Image (cartoon, rainbow, N blue to C red):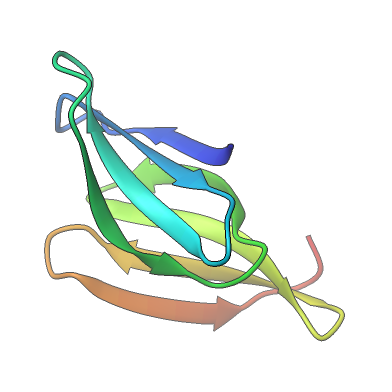
Length: 84
């Protein structure tokens, strides 16, 4: 498991799980109840929650990218970044 991030606006933790596809889960910090949020790009890791956005890094074709997932509007926005 990697890509774990704590939300300061919600009582939840966001975490990814390895498998056939990278899945982002929202886990209630009190009850432990988990729900699937979305699928992320292969290799998505190193995440943080900032202002209701899940920001993560991932590799693609030898370059490093930052992607954002809007936790309120449910939109993925991959953005190319310099090598991380």
